[in-house]
Image 1 (tube, rainbow, N blue to C red):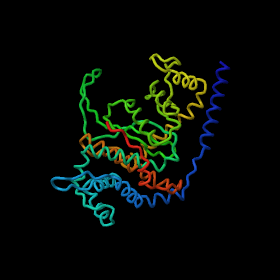
Image 2: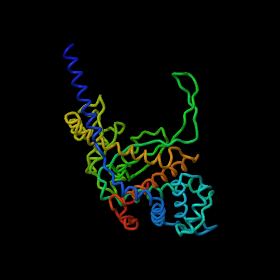
Image 3: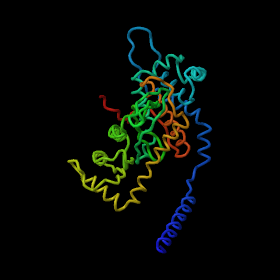
Image 4: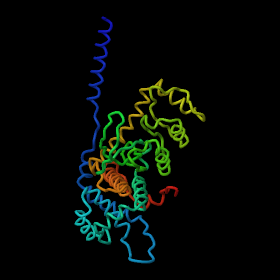
Length: 350
């Protein structure tokens, strides 16, 4: 009994020491640079958004009424998202943008909403998101993968077998993303229904990031744990830090190459603290999702799936531009989208 009492006291002292050390940690912020970036954010956001939209190629028009310029429509969608307002209330800001030569045409609210429902806008937004991350190519080499949900206005009734009654469940759309762990810029993104497994998009997200960024480490939670993912990251010349589950063993049950799985399992088992120190960088993607939701909203206003996906992508693009603005002042980066677009490696067409 005495030994147990002594052990409890020792553990209590160790915990108290760790808490003191944790309280002493400080995360220095360059407040003068940060303050300047925030006070000039909206002005620079409009300028950078215009420069990004200038990269959009307008489709050829042969017959019928001439459509609105796609670059102006994308600008309007992103401005609406940035201001977190409705398509009707953003009209005044769009008129001011036209007077400032940021757009060439007026974009009525019904035209804006109509384009939100188009799949071609989805492809354009994904491309702009990837290009917008390229100015941070020299900074980011470690990345984190995860997914988050955005609530929508619709509810779905389902039957619970255990409780034998009807319940209503709020539906949501998922955003699967990869972000750099230093600046929290998103380098690749996919969208899906809320019920889709996170593992489905791991390969495409990591490969899309590797097209334009050198990768040293990839961090992901236990939901992505598989031998296939460890081997995928290894083949890209990087190291994956995905923690193993309680029932995981050093031997892989499935066939194929298991060398990386066994090596990382031994590293996780024998050097867990060092492994978890690396893995802890994954928390940056949680901060990234928090930044997006706090600034641009946690819920989606659109009702159709395609428009909901485009709304999510617009939030991500606005987030990336805001990250760039902050890094202009903190890291003294230069943003030249025309130069970055030339070195951009596009996605393969399915």
